Length: 285
Ligand SMILES: C[S@@+](CC[C@H](N)C(=O)[O-])C[C@H]1O[C@@H](n2cnc3c(N)ncnc32)[C@H](O)[C@@H]1O
Image (cartoon, rainbow, N blue to C red):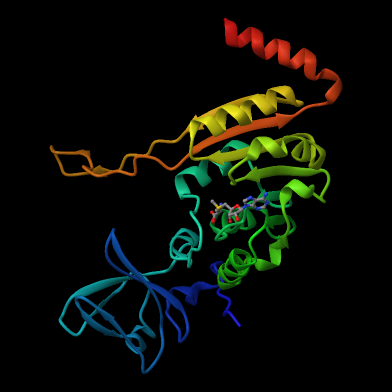
């Protein structure tokens, strides 16, 4: 059984670490370790070992020293910390792209969301965290091993109560109706646009994530042929900065590419030819 953790801050004493609490040991931005406070256990790093029992009773935000005298800052893990350390069996979606999905759609508590291609469950975790407590994420995945791994990951962060995982090809049809959002992170989103239309509520959101631009062209074309409007293709390029007074500049190394996002909204079939003409006119202007 995977142990559940609770992400919510519950009371004032929440900042004091108790036996079994999850903790991030922060050496620097690139070197962070997710551990549990546990009496009698050691955690070995290249900077010596840390007695995990010594974490108990300390405050988040304090520091702890390893056997070689290196200080590690003790932080409370965020959902991002957990998700980026999920065991992965697939490529995952990164927070910069997930952030755009959350902000562009305005997803919130109570939303019903269909996700195609659960993979390792990273996106699922953020969707579930947004729709809880009354919403649901219906996650479709064709690979049983991936699905089991995603289930464990979601249980680990206490979000499985808001997710229904299905071992099912989304091409066989989406069972749910009147959903607020469908997100597809799989190889051929353009093949499923009709299924998506059937599942979405009027004016509901479609989002796809694809690593190559030819996938984007096919998806946008399928949306134009279907009954969708407000179609946007976006790439989110993220640059980290090295901030030093008088010498601030972008980091030398950056993540050059993750993928492209396509957003669209479902409209009625009987106005789709009007909408298509209006959109075409705008493209030609
Ligand atoms: C890139 S991964 C998704 C990663 C996920 N967004 C995450 O953040 O962990 C794509 C997943 O889509 C699944 N998949 C591909 N075609 C599918 C289909 N027709 N129906 C359901 N799942 C599918 C694959 O098995 C794979 O796990």
